[in-house]
Length: 299
Image 1 (spheres, rainbow, N blue to C red):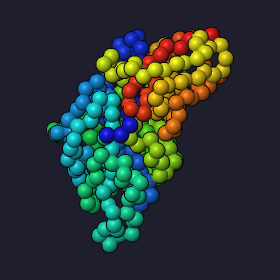
Image 2: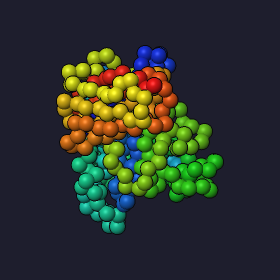
Image 3: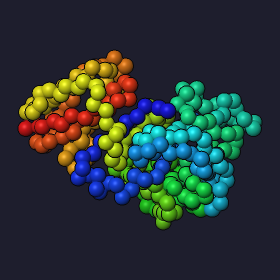
Image 4: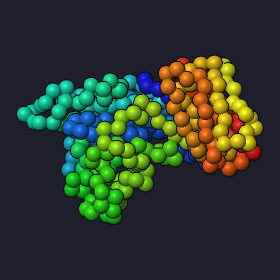
């Protein structure tokens, strides 16, 4: 499994988010050059989920029935992700699309099958995550052919900028569950943030506002946040282990800052210039995937 970016929320936020956060959903969609394509699946729960019975499916070019299916295998740990990448290593079927980048395939937990497997989507195919035939999440609109791609302008099938072709789409942190009913219209930017073509740096982790159980927090790593209280425009985080990432949450559990460390940082400077006064939760993820939580007061 890839790196974890666990979500930390306070008790007040737990009540509002716990209504969802109970089933796998698609957290990232990569539609890149040639066959550089991938789907990331996120487990928002506090328990591992076996992929037995789950499938990834493609509904091609407006088809209302499944065109191709990949049977998923493995287990997704709590608050972890599972990455499926197109498995093409050479040009197939006399086509001209290049093989998938080795760098992208290295991020895979499972490679997809030969053409025309689910990850041969090209911008106008609906993709679903299903469990025992029941739809757990839907990307796109089943039965609708948007032309080249779904777009940014209503009805999202004609005028506007292509958004499901030549982009990476990452599920917003505020999304806590999948789309289980085929939508009337598919407006991708409601639930996804768009990133440049061939952006893969986020594959292998996902940030979500779903609550983390108390057993997910491990304060065995020494972390110092200073100054605390802070009345300046920054604070420092110093850890006894290399810092993989830092997230800052406000009093209602909204993530307001996210930073990634490099492979050697044991100290990071966090800028807080635009944050209002109040109490915040600082979550520090170490290189050994241990999470430490510290309260911070900004005055």
